[in-house]
Image (cartoon, rainbow, N blue to C red; front, side):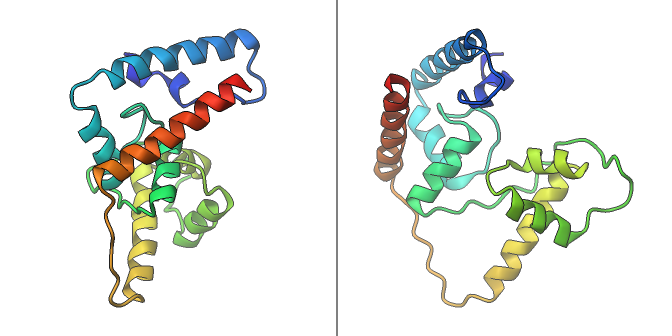
Length: 172
């Protein structure tokens, strides 16, 4: 289960990781990266994961954080899908308040939906529903919005820039 390993999402610079743990995470990432990059549908997978569908986990040689970075670089916003309803049931009882979800997102902008759900003790689908509602409310205030979709070449160029940055960080 190479691509489902939590180590693929672990930041290598994270405090508390020993040198041996960092090497093991780097080894697992390299293995997953090698397998993923060799896939015949890599380009289509990368494009869809960055531009069309908000997926979680390691996809097309990228983590959720990588794809967020690529979307920022490309000026892309991807709506969450309705079918994603993963996560634990609410632990604290009662519904999660819309304002609380938005405040938590603002306090932790780089967290994934799953991480936000864990912080609030609710399901990922609850987080996505509240974030979608906020986007829809903001979108209803905007008129004549033109959405520019990047080309496959633009996505691949942004991915190459991301990879170049990774290599520089590994050398330095």
